[in-house]
Length: 434
Image 1: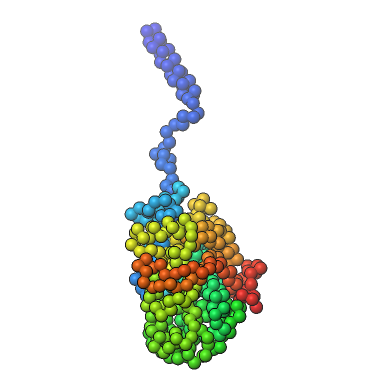
Image 2: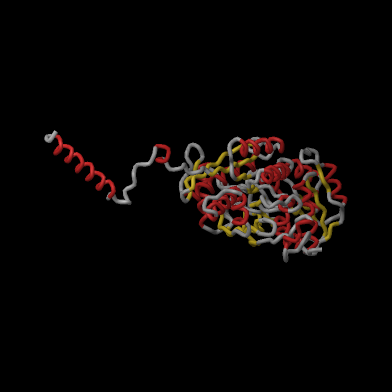
């Protein structure tokens, strides 16, 4: 027994030393975590659902908005997205999911719900048709998701249909016609107008009548509305001729421009009356405005007009990727991407509507058209618009115009009566506020 005691004593001493050493372990050297605690939580992917008409009747415009939007995301990230459309922006992973609504409001609604409910998108962007955009507004509001509108232009989007979840980077009808009517009323005194029989056309007609009257013009006939799918414009051109107006004003979008102007040429409308129609996309211009070389009108964007580094970047990017310069709505698409990114930066990556809405109201950022200001009262995007002279229609790079002036139209606040307290000091309902 005596021989065992030294061994027990040694074991006791070694055990005590081990306990002392364990007790003196540095607090900056933590023990290994349990398996379920070892992995850091995965970073949330921010998802943007981009919806546009890519194969339907307005696909020519939808494709411009799409390529501009993706260019804007690349500009913000400093690199293209990966094979899944994911961009790394200031430590945020932002995925863009592109969907084609084929110009159908029903399809737009279905895609929007799928993007929110199945794909889990945080922000919606779209679309070309103003009618389809109204569906997007309802769905975004119901699901507490922010919507950025590009390139739809109807006044109602930030007017009668306004809700606080909807923002726009596209211009609205009023901005087109404030820009155009300031010029038209220096050339002509009396007007008649034709527009398509849906929300974009109604907004255009209202805006043109108010703006041209505000600047001193007079409308001498009722506004003429024709179905958007009209191909036979002879009866409408006869009404325009019979009005006796100095000039006729057009609000239109899509392929109807070509048969409309063919009918106007055949009946001599272009020979006997002035024309008030903003210039539009590069490829359609020669088919419509061929007889009007030397005329002056408005345009919302042409790649040769802005003078800034972002526009220079966009021009080089679109030329490199698509072998053509940017067109009418590329800037709208890029601005939508830049607004989304700037808002996410401002919220530190919080993509909830509760965080984004106050960040976006009043936000200003630089884009290919220069400074864009999101008006806090009604979420209208204040931006540059242009008056240009048409020099030619055969330049291989579509260098058609000479810049006459750059304007920043401030449209009236068109919110519904129950929301007009938001309008503040802005004129309400019309340019005169009456």
